[in-house]
Image (cartoon, rainbow, N blue to C red; front, side, top):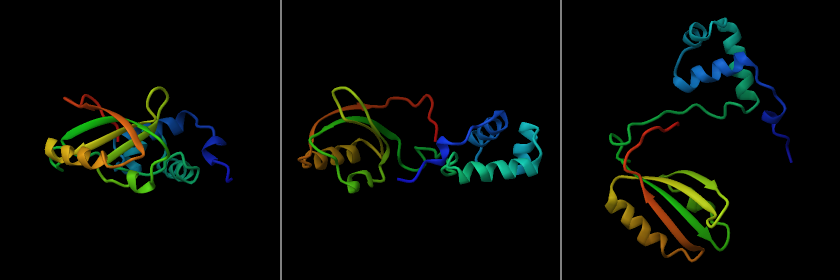
Amino acid sequence: MKPDPANSIELDIYDHKIIEALRNDARASIREVAKQTKIRPSTIHLRIQKLIKNNIIEKFTLQLNDKAVGENFIVFMFINTSKDLSSSFFADLRLKEAFGVTGEYDLLLKYKFKDISEFNDYVINLRKNKDIIKTLTTVCTIKLKEES
């Protein structure tokens, strides 16, 4: 098994400043990050490359307006399974996050649907999966904070 480089690198205060600046705006230029952090642009560039190489930064992403992209119906679903679910189960584009959890359920999943009708169709189809023992679903009423 290949060792995880992220476990062998220690982040310092400058790395944390750069990461925070990129969390706020992953599209910020090196010059903008340098201005925010008061670190030289050449140093910013080298450190970002080091963070990428060592898998500290796994990818750059964006945060979308859920309503504008038709994903305004957010659902959290706890699932108890009889065995591991297939990789195709996790490939569903409506599935945004998946976590293995402890307790009564095995998984906590976060989905985004267009509306309740699309969600209902999904649940009806989900019931056909014989590996799923039971579910508990919670519908989001308001998004207070979400990190992408």
